[in-house]
Length: 238
Image (cartoon, helix red, strand yellow):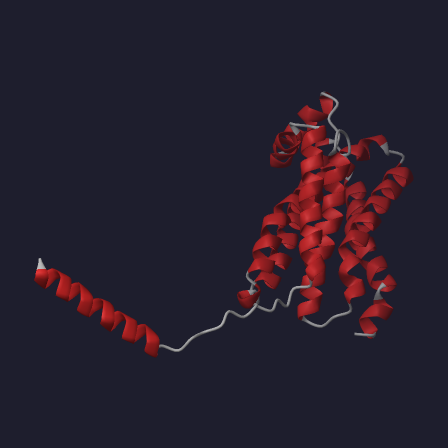
């Protein structure tokens, strides 16, 4: 018993001497390169989704079901479902918020003009205007409502998918060089899927081949040219 007490006393003294000889470190606040407003915007985005969930408890289930296939979307449309109905407009608002925020982080990293942060949101608006223009010119505006809903749906789902990605991006700012290109890759994947759905809807609606060509020119090419024209002065100032 005495040996155990002596051993405990010796170990205690050795530990105290060891700790006393160690250097004392002070806690310093970690500086963040991410602007504070980014975190507020992300919180606002989560709040938007929460309100949409309150308005319609099945909103995410219905949108996911419609996103999986065009046939599923048509089935929901027969039941009165709409991409801007029952809180759907909030998902579109969320897309505008997160896509602009993600593009802001991308542009900031490469020191581009921050005004271009709204380029993709403007691009979406131009696409919708071009879609209505195509339907008006061809006299098939009602038939183009399926394409309008599909395009809106893809962007709304992209906005939802970007939220966890942006959270990971800003919380790992020290190793975020790859996140900029993942962000662009996500956008391209959703854009290709959007075009694919557009072709599927065009064939299901029995559109003539020249309508499909007009669709590509007005909905994919024309908005890009208009956007490049409008923002050309901003790019020159970079």
